[in-house]
Amino acid sequence: MERYYQPEIECASREQIKAWQDERLVKQVRHVWDNVPYYRKKMEEKGLTPDDIRSSDDLYKLPFVTKADLREAYPYGLVAKPLKECVRIQSTSGTTGKRVVAFYTQHDIDLWEDCCARAIMAAGGTDEDVCQVSYGYGLFTGGPGLNGGSHKVGCLTIPTSSGNTERQIMFIQDLNATILCCTPSYAAYIGETMKEMGLAPEQIPLKAGIFGAEAWSEEMRQDIQNTLGIKAYDIYGLTELSGPGVSFECSAQSGMHINEDHFIAEIIDPDTGEVLPEGSKGELVFTSITKEAFPLLRYRTRDICMLTREKCSCGRTHVKMCKPMGRSDDMLIIRGVNVFPSQIETVLLNHGYPANYQIVVDRVKSTDTLDVQVEMTPEMFTDNMGEIDRRQRELVDGLRSMLGLAAKVTLVAPKSIVRSEGKAVRVIDKRKI
Amino acid sequence: MSIKQISVFLENVPGALYAMTGVLAQNKIDMRAFTLAEASDFGIARIIVDDLYKTTTVLKDAGYVHSISDVLGVVIPDSPGGLNRVLQALTDAQVNVEYMYVFLGHKTTGSAYMIFKVADIAAASAALAARGIRTIEQEELEKL
Image (cartoon, rainbow over all chains, first blue to last red; front, side, top):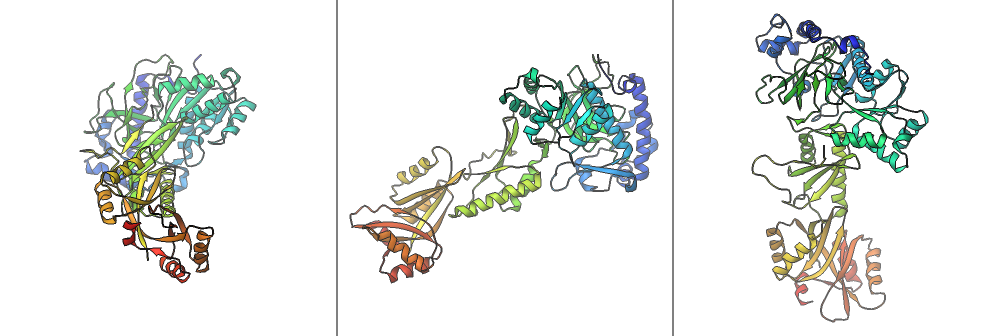
């Protein structure tokens, strides 16, 4: 039997959903116009006033918001509530030096946790369940989001956070965890470790997993389901919008329902910005219509995606998005951390290395690896092995502080990185996602 | 008082060393001494050759990154205690030896040759000279 956290919302008629979106968008546009000079200026530049937005049909008129806007407005430029009304920040991993810092009122957190609760119940969770949250806690939204959702459902929540796999497995076993929330690669790693310990799927109490924050394939889903003996559900979200739970999978396991009472999704042509008809492949754009502290209008996710409003077997009526099929920029997601090649380039240049580099991303034993290959130059070369080693370690440290991620640095022979005619091939992603 | 050593950057992959010796062979360069230092993903080939200018030119043309450093070529009597005497002199002069390796002379002279990379080449030369220990010059390399 399909379970819902908020059935009257999740299974509302399309007309009802449209009515919510119309009303909330109009209100949201007025809210940012009144409270965020940055938005007002952007709207004025397009000759718009709040009166031009009378329903969600007028959404296309509004200017886009991009990651560059978030950087420019950092830290407070897009905050739409007095800070005394804000109760929390969450943050993404570093993007070219500056992180994205998102603000929440208590109401924002409430709604975010509702979204996560919907995801947990869609995965079959109830107040009888024991939910182990193995996403990182802290600035990263994964842990806090699912933790809150788990509380709302009434699950017994185990906030293990990420890491210490032996302890993760001990809690799953000893406390009979039935739902696991983490990144898919960590789920696969936990599964492999349990297999090595000689545990058969039927000896593992888990029945479902909610896995997100990075791309994963259907094959990986099958592997995780088989080793852990569970059903594995995808969840999607962005810190900029709230965190995990912007959309989530249901029992149909074929696409993620977007919480349309909170977010309006559009698919656009990434080159022209034109809105594409339903079923087209393009860049996913979100407008948060209930967020108080950090509302985003037409935020360009850079995720390439498709939407479908086909009737779903689970009974939910909210639009479904497919797994993101790629990026319209060059961002990589490595171990759940957003990485732009430009960040790596910045570190290399700061350390006196040339811009001839290649980034090799692979997945070894379910863990993403990042290898930055740099060409040795006459200027960098010395007969002193210790000196080369010291510089290499400095570069590794520089990359870690920029990316928040351990990377390997490999020195390669001069001219060994292939020069291409046009755009340099900077990234080799060997992961089979 | 010193001789020139060429250090060549090599990737730590199969065939890297072979490719470099191939370049030297094709250009008929005679290596007099050779040693390899390795880290996990790269290595440094250190060579002493008969023709420094020609070698650096062909390496550069073949795309190798290299550097030149001054090292000592020390003549060591081929008898027990020979090396010990050299090290004694350097120790007394407080000169640090960074690394050393054997030199392949191809004439039977009753002496062995060793290459010393030291922290202070002037101090080391003086200390060795004071004990009557001979070091070889660049011009001598061809004859050895």
